Image 1: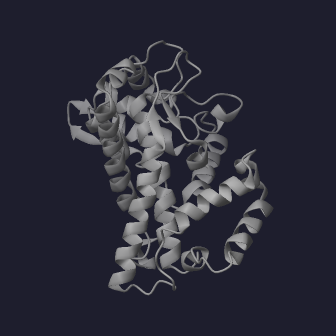
Image 2: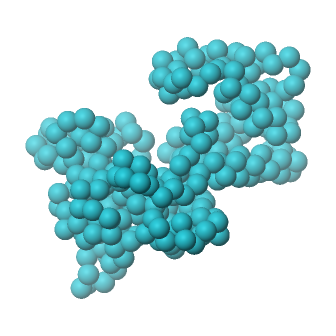
Length: 295
C-alpha cells in the first residue's frame, strides 16, 4: 500500500494521514447515503451515525506501524515469541488500545473517552486473539482492553455476535475503496501502472497482457475465484475507459484534473456497490457488496 511510503519520497504518493482523512470522508458519505435511502432500514440494523463512521475512519490506522504488514509481523514475533506475550502485536488491536488507553485526553480518563458506538465502529475484527484459524492472525483487541471491548460490544444484538457493526462495515469498505483508488492514482503518477495504455481502445493488447499476468499470480487468481474472466474484463473495460489521458503522467494541470475526475468516478462506482442489509440471522452481515466491485 502506498500509504506507507516515506515522506522523503516526494509528494506523488498518498500517506497514512491523507488516506485516513479520505477514509473518514467516504465513511461519512456512505452513512449519509444509507440514511437518505431509508431511515427505517437504518433503524432496523441498530441505527447509522455519520459521526461515528467518520470517527472510525480517522482512527482505523492509528496502530499500524511503518513499513506495513512486514513490520507488523516482525513486531508480533518480537512480542509473542521474544517476550512470550500471548497477544503479540496486531495493528487493529493497537488502534483500539491507543484510543481506549494510550492517548491522553484528561488526567481522569484513560484514552480518548470515546462513546460505546465509536469504539464498536473501530472493531473490524471484533474478537481477541484465538489459538487457531484466521482469528489467530487478525484480531481487534488485546486482553488488556477486554473491559473496553465488552463495553463497546454491549451494542450488539447478542453476546455471541461476532459480526462487525454497521458503522464498522462502512469504515471497512471506505478503507478498501480509498486505498484501491489511491494506489491507482499513485502508481500512475509514478509511472508504475500505465493507465493511459490500459485505457487505449486501439486493439486491447495491453489489457490482455495485464489480465494474463494477473491470472499467472496464484494469490490473484484465487481471489478472482469462479468469476468468469470475460465478465471481469468487461467490467474493467467499463471502468478504465473513463480514464481520458492518452499519455504518461507529467503533472500538467490537465493531467491532474482528469486524474481527479477518474478517481471521483471510481469512488462513485464503489460507493454505489454497497447497500445496507437487514440480516435474518447472525451469519449475515449488515451490508451487501456487489461481487465484481468486491474483487
